[in-house]
View 1 (cartoon, one colour):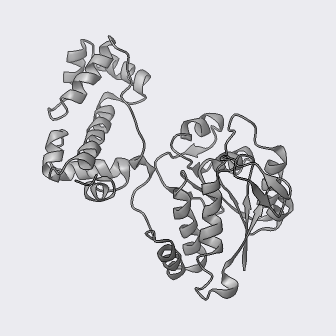
View 2: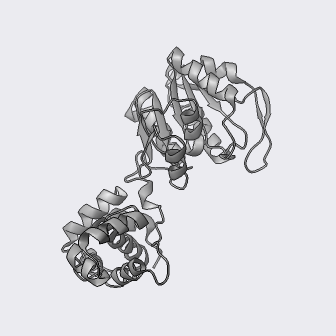
Length: 318
């Protein structure tokens, strides 16, 4: 029986907390795994009440001693990111790592693993809205804001909220095999594996200030996405050299003009796939892609899924 300690830090996110309890602790009970299943225990800094982000009372039966004993320590998301992660929790996580334990986080739980030094030099993910803060606060962590989860062997991280389900199913698949993971997914009425990543959900508004030359250029480009635009033509419209345009574009958006333009074309394609019944060929044309294949390649590269699957998932009832 594999032991899992779910560490509830102050202001724990109840949705994140419920995921490992349900997925690992409940869905395998009638699968016949016997000793190969999981024993899940809720832990806090000490046994007793834990403050939750929603105000719903939570009582945990175990403290940090259980973290030291568990095979896997899983940290759900928690609020209060402006406050330091409790030193006692960081010390317990480091001690458990030295002992050889495995670690996982859901959503902002990655901040606890990072504070304990367990993500140093590793690729990791958190909720896309908090990814910039994680990268800024812990520069030694290679933050990937687009994926649903990251498996770095002994340390795994997942994106926001429901991505924790994907992570837990992945753990079951690793530990018990595909049949057990598929069984757990069927019990929860979710797919055993989701295509794509959280890049599908990220909102990237067009930056800029009214009256700024580059803001006017970006506005023009977004209004004429179907037309071809080269770096030279964009520089000519902005009345500056290609080198100056690229330098200023990077300073204001963090991207080159051509990469930014591709992002806007994919963003517009997402909107058309969500809100219209236009054929994929027409979507590609309206967004400035030379062919449906070009749209598919760029769309998959940036969202992790295909235009057709994206429409199936996000298309409004029409």
